[in-house]
Length: 432
Ligand SMILES: *[C@@H]1O[C@H](CO)[C@@H](O)[C@H](O)[C@H]1NC(C)=O
Ligand SMILES: [Zn+2]
Image 1 (cartoon, rainbow, N blue to C red):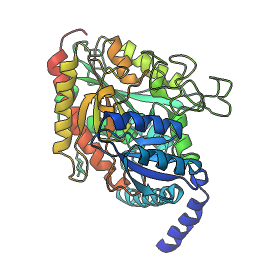
Image 2 (image 1 turned 180 degrees about the horizontal axis):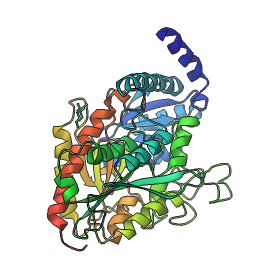
Image 3 (image 1 turned 135 degrees about the vertical axis):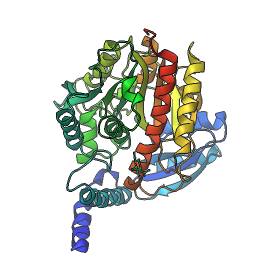
Image 4 (image 1 turned 45 degrees about the vertical axis):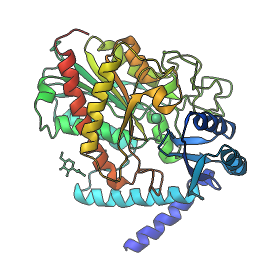
């Protein structure tokens, strides 16, 4: 019976991921700034898709299209950049990922009496929304589900407000965490839904609700997220088609280049077909406007904003567009370090240790129009991008194996808790 199910799954899987036939994936390892510069030029030239950003001393993971293998390898070799093959058949790796996810689904359904929980596997947007709705129904005293807007394709963009004082105690700092702006970064939404779970269904540390109000938005970009399940696994952008004459053929905007902070200046693209297309104007996307509006509505109280991405085990802070430091750099760095230490303490030895720093300096790559920079620029004192872990040195598929999702949720939560308390110490009772 099990074997039959598995075979059926193989048959099902083989029709998927056709667009990745012939693609290969590589690890690269950079040793200095010079290599870093030439690497990003090569990546650009061959339209390399960077899944995990290589930083000096830590491998990154890339996808290379069939027509560019030879040129890419030639140029990488010429620059003396160390590389190794991750997979010579991206399509079959994706099929492997699908099987892992299906196995996890079976196991978690058995554990949870048929129920799909959004933090125990990579779940479809509908399961995530259902979970939020059920939380709102079961815990109306502390959890309010807000249907903020409809995405470009008409899906609800939902978030949960969590408070034991109905958001009315102005002395409480607000904590805002979002995920899923980059569609393919599947480990991001579970860390946000896990935070909902830990605050509403399994509150073990009461100060987190006594002293703070929370806004948790697991999937900023539901259209792109959906598309990664139904069509293109490595889709990153939104799905809008109204940005540009080319948007019909090449839909979507990189949400994390669409914020109004040095928009369209660096580390972004004007081409609708690029994965880092910034859009026709800042906040062209309804999805980023939802985040913007939350930030502004609660600005006087938001002490900490975190946007969840993957992967790379990094905590990054402003300014991302030029590597300069904000007036609050010391606070950003110390709270960032405290969060990273807490995560590392609860992590597994197979996971890389967290790296903390200014986004442009850590990545050796400036970017403009990002959420964390925007939040900080308008006055959110602590604003971070988390690059959640992938097991990059040994990983087989492209997703973090779903059996590690719970681990990542747990350890990330430990980091959030430490960051939140630090934010409270720094900003409680201070109107921001
Ligand atoms: C995660 O934390 C929960 C308690 O919050 C615990 O029951 C569970 O065993 C932990 N799982 C892992 C993988 O650490
Ligand atoms: Zn991302």
